[in-house]
Structure formats: structure tokens, C-alpha cells
Image 1 (cartoon, helix red, strand yellow):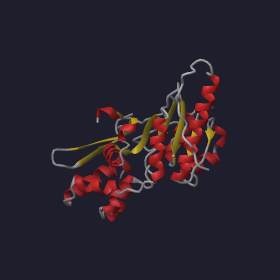
Image 2 (cartoon, one colour):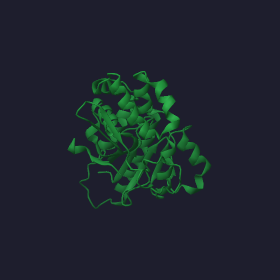
Image 3 (cartoon, one colour):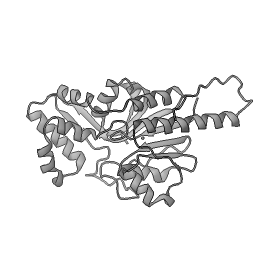
Image 4 (cartoon, helix red, strand yellow):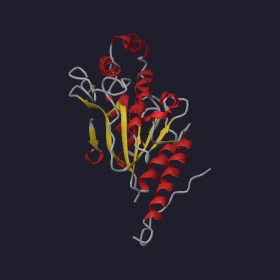
Length: 264
């Protein structure tokens, strides 16, 4: 059993798009979205867009069908399944929302592989409208992000101190948690995306080992290589303590509102 926590961002990491933009664009509401964008925070805007789409006759089923078409690289799904099979604890920290993430992960059969989803809350009300609420209620207080670059509704910096962490992300919001990682942890920034640029500009602030990735195939390669190397290292350190250990390595060819997944 690997004593590793793998933390994934969701948008542009697990899926290869921004789920908010994907829904808005696919349901032909981009023009209104762009008009309202300068007037309110992103999370509040998505709540407003769900209200507008409902008023236009779009159903929750319409939104779900759009989400199921969101692009995801097959290697991402394979990597998630392999990491879970190797005993890693898988979590998501995302500025998307519960409904979007749950719908996509269930569609691809990987929802139950995650022990925890940290994201903005959402639910379908009695009228069938999707309601979206901020992870942190910024109207009452600030989340006091140390970097001042996180959105007002969410800072991803809370991290486990006990286990080894592999953090995979792409966006500006993934820089803050990168600063909290230990020397024994790993950060996997998506190359040529905002978090990669921030890490390159501030690499002396990062204690964790940095391993870049570009697409789903490279994410799978890097992630499984890190997991396998840590399993081998752990087995060597405990060699002789448990000769019955039958952990299988995966061959690698040369990316709060806490929801226990088991409750859904």
C-alpha cells in the first residue's frame, strides 16, 4: 500500500478544458457571460449563469449531457485508476463545483476512486435549477490567502502534513498549495500554464520536487513513475519487516467543502 496522497486540480488537469467555460459555450451563453464577467466574481457569475440558463429553458439534464462531452485524455483515466490500484489516496481540490465534477467523474467511472472532493458547493433546487455557492463565503470574511493571488471564494493551500503528497495542477490557484509542500513532496505543474510560469519565476520558494507535464500521456508517465519509485524506496527501507508484501508496480511507458465520495 503506497503511503501517498495524490491531489488533483480538476479543470485543465483531469479534464482538458475549463468546465465553467465549457458549459457556458456549449449552451450558447458566451455573449452574456462575457458581458457580466467584469461586474462580479467568477463564482458568483456562474451562479448567475445557471439562473439565466434555467430561465431560457435549459434543464439540469441539458447541463449534465454537456458535461459528459467535456474532453478528457484517456491516459488521465488510466493514471487515476492505476494510482488508486497502487494504494494512493486520491483527492481533488478545485474551483469548479460539486455537480460538474461529480457528473463528469461518474460518467467516466472514476468518481468512487476519490476519497475527498474539495470544491464549491452546488445543488439542484426544487425548480430544477442548479445553485452554486462559494467554497468560502467571501461576503463575510476573507480566507486570508498568504499569496493574495487566489480567488476570493477559495484558497487551496490546506495540506496534509503526515503523508507524502503529489500535487498536480495547472492554474494560478495551484501556486498557493505548491508553497506549502514539503521537501519530501512533489509538485506536477502543467507546462506553459499559469502555475508553471509562477513556479519558474519563484522556484526558490518551492521546497517540493518539481516534475512538469504537458498532456495526459505525460501526466500518466510522470505520476506513475513517481509513485513506483516511492514504493520501491519504501520497500527497500522496510526490507525484512514484511516479507509478505505483495505490492504490484505499474509499468510506465517511455496534473473547505469536503465531500466524502462514499456518501454519494
